[in-house]
Length: 461
Image (cartoon, rainbow, N blue to C red; front, top):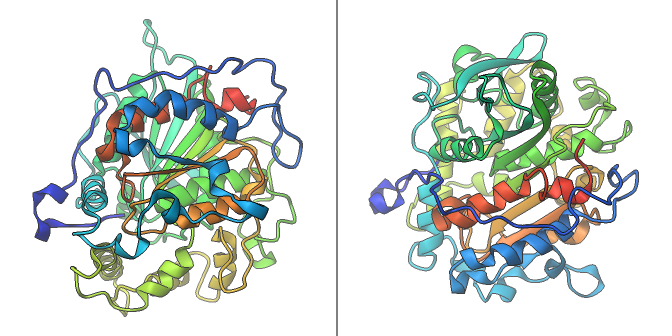
């Protein structure tokens, strides 16, 4: 997501938050990567350990990195109360949800949000080069290629070293201009991971070179992500496993990929019309290192409803004001008949212009993308089908989305490979500005080959 708070001053400007010496704190697992049979996912049985247990062991070892007031962190099991009902997140933290979108009431949440999001874009011009990364194009369909920046860790002889690769997905309409992506890519690469920073259909250089390749908000992009994982391993034998990190709407993408990887052939979330555009489930496994979803947009249809109304007063609701500016700018760039802040209209225009065609039933696409029920319409329990570690993280002071949504989803999800965490700070995707040592340590430990969630849960290949 791209927001702008320049009217309020430079404290809200996007900031680089690179990894620094001394930031990383390692966690250990007593029996990670040993004594656990292969975890086949929810449909096939579990190993003795899970992502939820991994988080329960890792979080106390990282807690010292948080400020004293920030050590109140809500984990998976704490989100569910009596009779399996979701707990009131805001009461648990002692926060009022009605004031989170006000500058004077949620200053830190607003600041960290503003510092994590980008005002720049890399569409007409690519982002400046990153040390160690090379641009490349990845084929995901007969005439569709996605753009990315890949760094392969090399041995002393200069050849790529065996290791795991982490794929980075930006937020809503984001691309490689985002400093957060660059900094996180450098941190992972410096820690010994192969790294791919990816731009999706309708994003960045893909938008520049393929302007007629429209964004489908996850319907086709989810399949693309599985093909990216396959391409990485087939093209680069040095890559053992893949993992993925997403932010905001990019977090939805990585969660959808975890579902799509383990879905059944008759998954009710994929209607016959949608199925015509997708491959059947593959026996091949994807992103076995796990996926991390920061600030996912879980009730995006309610967000869409809110954007049907104009939010013209920046001071009343700054996040929504600037979000609608981003939507309107996208409509103007694509030359749509209407230029407004309506997310519903943007989605409708993009789907009608895309290869799905103007007659494609957009409501069936909504079913495919839904994580929580909406107005009596089902969500499909997608995360029950995940067979790789999934860790979802949000902040109680998110000024844009409700942290309660994560507790609501967690209470509905039995799959122990799916874990959740709500932090006291971080705003919307602003976890790096909020606390860089914790942010980087959580990520690097999650993907660690010997002590990470996949090793602990037995999902790694």
